[in-house]
Image 1: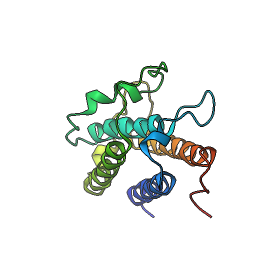
Image 2 (image 1 turned 135 degrees about the vertical axis):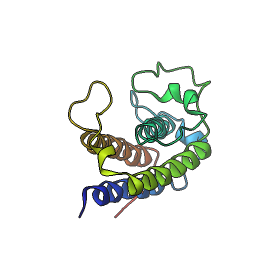
Image 3 (image 1 turned 45 degrees about the vertical axis):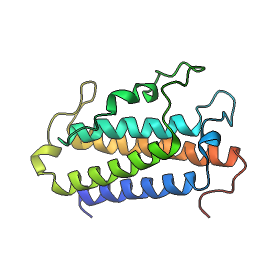
Image 4 (image 1 turned 30 degrees about the vertical axis):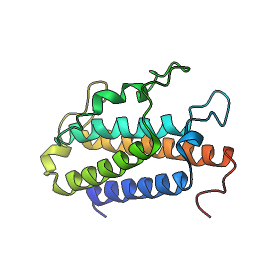
Length: 159
């Protein structure tokens, strides 16, 4: 399997697990702290969307004009208590699905030299190395969605 096909397959699986984890979850449930001290489902999905916006920029795709509205979902930015910048769950889900389709297309169309480009500041290697790291990052947070789903009293998303 080629590197691009592997990345695309991982991102497709992440998308499938996100959809399964969010099945039947309401916005009200998504903003409930199901586990003390752990971010809620809305924040976790918003964080995935915020990261996807950055991936699209790195892949040279036009950014979502609402990306600036995602600061609430940046790692370490949430201070708790103030949820005025929180998006609705359906908006987050729709944006996530649109982004993943755009990322898939960008990876399909990516010339080899793009993957060999420099990664974002703070990372070593090439852009391809960063994309593998960020795929792990997204998968980590998708696992949190499954855990939070169970904490809200729902059956597991798979199996």
